[in-house]
Structures are given as C-alpha cells and as structure tokens.
Amino acid sequence: MYVFEKEQKVWNINGVKIGGPPGAHPTVLIGSIFYDKHKIVSDRQKGIFDKKKAEELINKQDEMAEKTGNPCIVDIVGDTAEALIKHIDFVASVTNAPFLVDSTIAASRLEAIKHAVEVGLGERAIYNSIDVHSKEDELNTLKEIGVKSSMLLVFSPKALLPEGRIELLKGSSQEKGLIQKAQEAGIQNILVDTAVLDVVSISFAAQTIYSVKKEFGLPAGCGPSNAITAWKKIKKDFPPESYKACLSGSVLVTVMMGADFALYGPIEEATSVFPACAMVDGLIAYYNKRKYKIQPESPTHPLTKIF
Image (cartoon, rainbow, N blue to C red; front, side, top):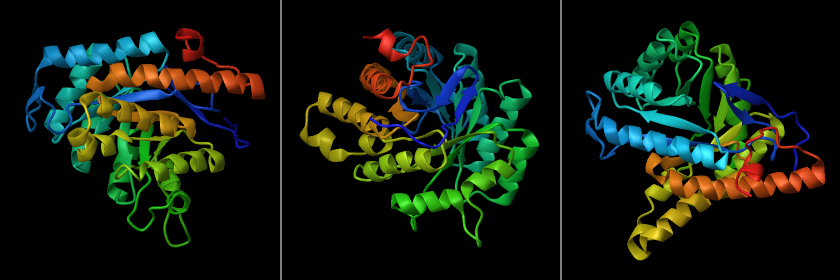
C-alpha cells in the first residue's frame, strides 16, 4: 500500500471516474465483446451477431458493476468499419457505460469513432489506441473528428523493460513521445495501457503502471487477460476453475501496483473478476484511509459496497 507524490489525474468519462491516488476511486473494469472467435458473432465482416446473447452479457457486466461498486467500460471490437459501427450502435442502445473503439485496423477505428462522435456518442467513446506506429494522418484525423479520450499503448520490441516504456511516453530529441502525440491530436483524457505480451510480461506491465503514475500522474492499466486467455498450459494441465482464478489473479497483480483500469478479457468473465477486484480495492482503500487519510471519493466504493 502506498501513495504517490505526483498529483494524480482523474478523468470523468461519461460519469466514470478513472485515476487518482490508490483508494480514492475503484478500479474500472473493461470487458471485451465481439472479439476474435467470439461465439455470438456469425459474420465478422458485416457485424452480424446474436443480439439477445450480446445484451445479456452487457447487462451482466452492468449488474456486477452495480453490485461491487467497480465501474465498467465495454471494449467493443470489430474487424471492419461496418461491423464496428453496428457494434457501437447496439452497445450504446443497451448500456450507458463508456466504450472502447477497438480494431487492429486504424482505418476501421477512425471511421467508427467518427460515426460515434457524429451520432452524439463522443463523450462515451475511447479510441483504442495510439501507439508508436500511429502515423501523422491518423493523429490529424483524430483531431479533426474531435476525439477526447484515447488509450496510449506503450509497447515497442525495442522497449520491453519498464524504463524503456517510460521513454516511449516521454520521447526524445529525435522522436515525439506518445503523450505529446496524443496532446497534439487533441486528446484530453489520456489512458496509458502498459501492454502485456505473455504471462511473464505481466510483471513488466504492472511495474510500468506504477512508474507511469509516479512520474506522470496519468491513469494507467493494462490487459493481462490477453496473456491468460492464450496460456495453453493452464488450460491443458489444470481444471477449468484454475483458469478463472489465474485470470482474476492477473488483474489483481496490476491493481496492487496502482492500476486505475484493467481489460479483463471476455465479457463472460465478469462474474469472476468483479468480486475479486472489489475485494482488493476495498483492502487498499481501507489501508490508505487509515494510513494516509485518503478518503474513498465514491459513495459506492467497494469498501462500502461489499464489506
């Protein structure tokens, strides 16, 4: 348990507060829907999916957020702009939660977030993401659209250690840092994703979260679930409940290092991850309230919600 000397930024994205000193605000949990190989999707190119099942999953995440006090965001994934736009319109009609506009293809992300802004969803939309490969035309387009919130993905094969990832944010005399790029693109709410590649790299990502908050005071987190869902050995050699335990455990490692948000993977896992995260958030808040006089700022903080 600890505090940071640097002032900690807090963003309010459509009523969801992200950031601040440990214990002040609960961890925001982000579940992914319409992801690759998601069984509810029948046509990834056209964005055709089972609406009934999708609504049930989104409602369950909202229910877990209400029960635990951990706010939620929906990570909306899509391969094409057509699919992503359909996904966004549907999710926005089902929940009031903010959402990530998430695609591996920059053109699809840009077209989809432009649509979101044009139909009045700009306050809820979070671009995912700006990284070292983002070109000037992509950043200029974000500014033209008027995007307010974005993830910064802090990863490069040349910067695997936490120290190197911090340098990616800072930049150098030869290269602009990701923070400067985002600011020049008009991004107001910067969320730093410290990037997870495999299970062991969760340690680097978690340490980078701590370093980001210590040096910049920006909200930070990551998606440790990416590694756990691809971890073949845990699925092959251990019973099913072991996978769920490790998925939740991976999130808790980052929370103990100061994570303000966590992409916990498939939205189906909400019932496992939310209670575990709420418990740890409550423990951190209790200690920091007693030790450092940091008061939980939310009346529905897990400390009061589940204990």
